[in-house]
View 1 (cartoon, rainbow, N blue to C red):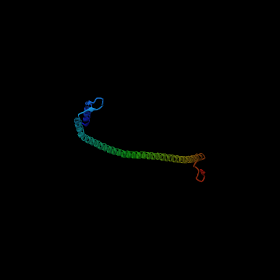
View 2: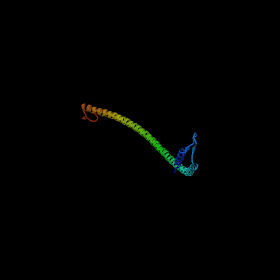
View 3: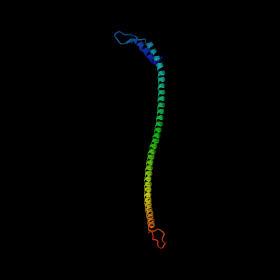
View 4: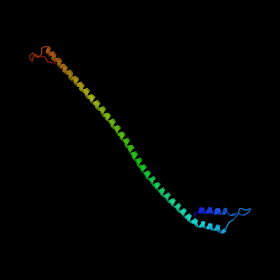
Length: 164
């Protein structure tokens, strides 16, 4: 029988005992009460050992759970550090890539501007040269017309006027 049930049995036995008049004392069968207490005393160490074993087992389970929790937390912290490190490297690489792309675009624009300026200068020089050449051609044609109007090339080479 469970020790708590034995205690309830003893309590019921004492409550059902005959009371002494004008007193809170009761008349109980001493031998019967002592027998009940002996049974309780015999059962109690077994129950205490069983309770202690349960407490020990509970402590082992709690300790194992705590170790597992600590292990999981440790792994989580390591993984967190790794992921933060990877994220920091990624962010750093993205910033560096953006910086490099920005520099490359700026350099490309600078080169484009230089090429446009060079081409414009070259075309302006070419235009000036063509204008001078055109002016020379026009002067030559004008001289040719003038010669043709004054008599052309029919005269002898000694009598021909020089075109310039």
